[in-house]
Image (cartoon, rainbow, N blue to C red; front, side, top):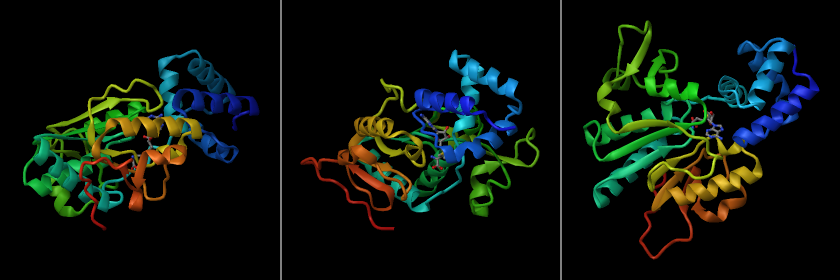
Length: 278
Ligand SMILES: C[S@@+](CC[C@H](N)C(=O)[O-])C[C@H]1O[C@@H](n2cnc3c(N)ncnc32)[C@H](O)[C@@H]1O
């Protein structure tokens, strides 16, 4: 069963309005497959879902996020970013007594837990003066992030030593491993839609991970989000994107960009730290 032309247009309008996501014609087969996996196989189910989402029904709104976004992520994706972020956060906390990092599209949590692991490895302790916040528009993905429970398959990229040190076997979860409670200190999660104005997340953040989400946003939404990211970042902070991504029309708010590492622009009179090369 495929989305009718009318349904596809309605879905496209909803994705743009609610999440800032631009859907292209070539994505139609992928959306069809995803809709089927989510139990939206027939025309009637799709109609119910679309009408619900249009009228603001919360369940349909959650389904919309799962349908039009990809939650693909992994532990230590671009490992260099975690070394750099942890080093920068420790430097900032040494200077100011505290530091904060935000993963702005944390999906199922691997990105933020990787940072927590790297910080623990570098300091030799758990918790400490660095606060870590993970947010996402997808409530289901965020619930998994908070649970911190992962199948052995998704932990395969993690070195065995790290698995042993930072995960345990919860009695309830057969075959999966859960992040250790000691690592949860100073880590929090919040539902947050990047395109909604009036961000109220605390900050300023010394490091913001905003990887693999800007690429899905429309030009206008991407520009506004990048401007707000600039406002949420400390003057000497770091913004991390996937190395293949760009900032679009608001690129002049940042400088750098090598390996996906950006710094706020213009350079102030404060000394800036130039990140070391990988
Ligand atoms: C591909 S994942 C990126 C995960 C992680 N940052 C990484 O690079 O491994 C994209 C995430 O962006 C989230 N997302 C999409 N649109 C969003 C929006 N408007 N506000 C917040 N999160 C959004 C999706 O729910 C999804 O979890």
